[in-house]
Structure formats: structure tokens, C-alpha cells
Amino acid sequence: MINKVILIGRLTKDPEQKILPSGSKVAELSLAYNRSYKDKNTNEWKEEPHFFDIKAYGMLADRIITQVSKGYMIYVEGRLVQERWQKDGKTQSKVSIFAENIKVVSRPQGKTDLTASASSEEHANGLDDIKADIENIINEEDDDVPF
Image (cartoon, rainbow, N blue to C red; front, side, top):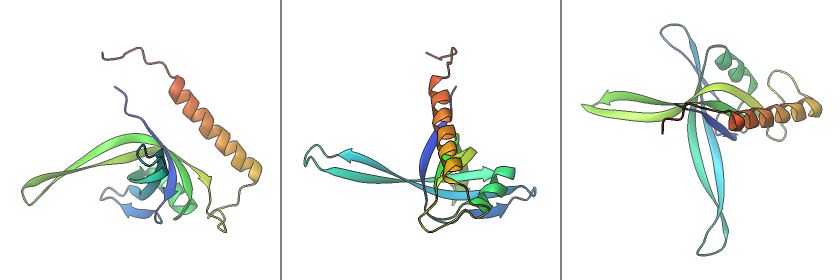
């Protein structure tokens, strides 16, 4: 089975840090992605916004809390997780993304990195790494297809 998600989008708010009863840290992020499409009826380009809830744990949570804030464009690689709970006798559920890797793609204009400023060469290398990550995932062979 495969459960892999790759998104690039902008943070809609600053990450929130929470501490679980076990003492583990969690960073909760909200990512926006705009899908551009051409309306068949009007022949005009339109944008359709989508919002995703992302959770990062442990060392990734520590790092991301100090490195990004609202407006940063980030690359997220992870998997979908369905959370379920009971409320007023009814089962509620929500699908979110469990982040396994997060990289900064770009900062909002006028903002510097929260921990250290990266040169344009480092930024370009980071984008190359992201492209390579995506290519590797696309080219992975899975011989165990269930159909």
C-alpha cells in the first residue's frame, strides 16, 4: 500500500507548538495551496484555494517552529492520517498530513530566515533537492501492486 503526500504551499499562520502528555512536541501548521484552472464556460483562468492541516513531531517540530512563520512557502512530504473521536455520541473524523520532511522553498518578501539567512545559492540548491526528491518518488518502482 502507498500513502504518500507531497505539497508545496504557503503557511496561513504561524506554526503552533503543543506538548503531548508523553512530553513529545508537536508543531501544527496550516498550509494553503491554490489550484489554477481554466473555466470551460467562460474561458477565464480561476483559482481554487485548498487548505491542509499538517502535524510535525519530535525534532522536525522543534526545527520547524524556529524556522518558519506565516507566509513562508514550504515543501511538505508526508502521509495522510485520519483522526477519529467521539463528540455528543457521534463519531467525528478529520484527515490531516503527518509530515515526514519539511523544507523551506521561499520566504515572504522582507522576511529573513528566523534562524539564519541562506544565500541565493543555498536556496537554489534547496530547490534542486526538492525537485530531486519529487523525481525519486515518481520514479520509485512498486512491484507489489494490489490489483
